[in-house]
Length: 325
Image (cartoon, rainbow, N blue to C red; front, side, top):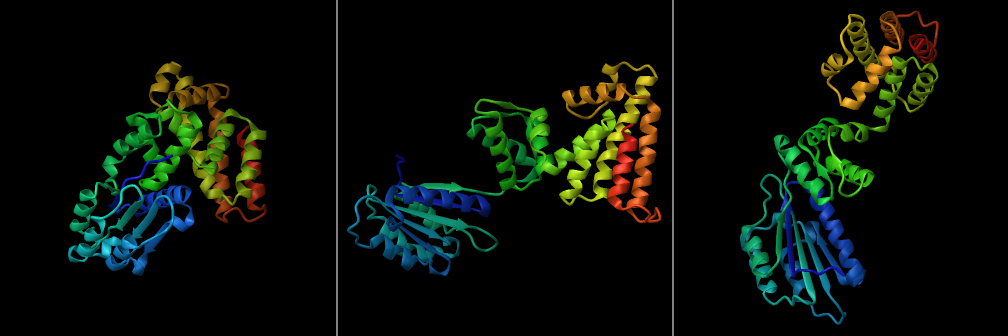
């Protein structure tokens, strides 16, 4: 059974995180006291007088009672006096009050409320937006809380994949922790494998199948992506980029460069580089040159420059099959 402090104050400009903490605390409170034991005061109704009245209310209910006040960022220091006075008589064994302040612009937490919560033996926590340059360190700390170890390169890769929105990053991190299990060590390879969207994963599969000369797989994935609504120009970008990488590798191998030296020039995880080099080695340089010409023709067709004889889907399937030969 969780233990509760007499007071909590959660404030900051990360409104998403504050909302999550309110939802979690409310759920815990309702498990502890039932819905009838939780009083929520929010929005325009969240005035110092209303909160003070709730704290002073007489009740015949058994067990702990909870008062949640969401919107205290609009209070002024002078407004807090009536609440601070009511908090002096809080019975720590039967009452918990939680304040939530979503700070923004001129709406800031009143310092007097901060002092009142601390004086009551409560907990104060700030949920602030993290600056982009500090996100890797923030992710490493959050990973530790989830029971996994995330290294610096992995943290940077996750930001590169997901973006700088903290809530999205945290969701991806939670999925990674569930996927790999407690105690797992997460680096750039695990991030590259796990953090991509479903469409992005399939796009990589399509490009890799083209390089490997696997026409059935390439065709199946292409059709699936089109059914999901993916546009041909967007798919072409991934295919062409991978084919250009493959051509450069094929030319280097044909010139006598050792595979280990070629691998060092590739900006990708080690396991992915090994697989790409192995796939390229099965085909010759001319195959990748022809494939790039076919992709250029497909791009022209998709932009209406091919005369419109074939539908876009038919043209794409035909180009992919031919490029994989």
